[in-house]
Length: 83
Picture 1 (tube, rainbow, N blue to C red):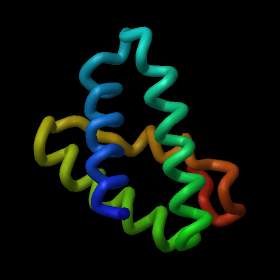
Picture 2 (cartoon, helix red, strand yellow):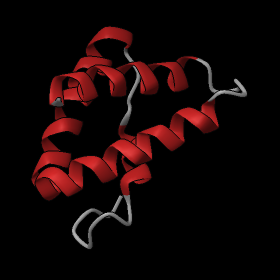
Picture 3 (cartoon, rainbow, N blue to C red):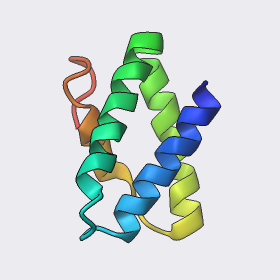
């Protein structure tokens, strides 16, 4: 499941970074938020950290853009996650 979510996250964030003015960005951000809730429910903050670390490395490597601002979409899942 994590591998599928990771691929989906990479697709979602890559789309948002490459198409910031698209009307689809809000729905993609909503899905990113849902995935964060799923990760937190299944594995807590550690799962969120692990997932985002992998996503950040891959997106930065593949398209040269920084996905860090998208971490804030997972705020509210835990007191520990504050970006």
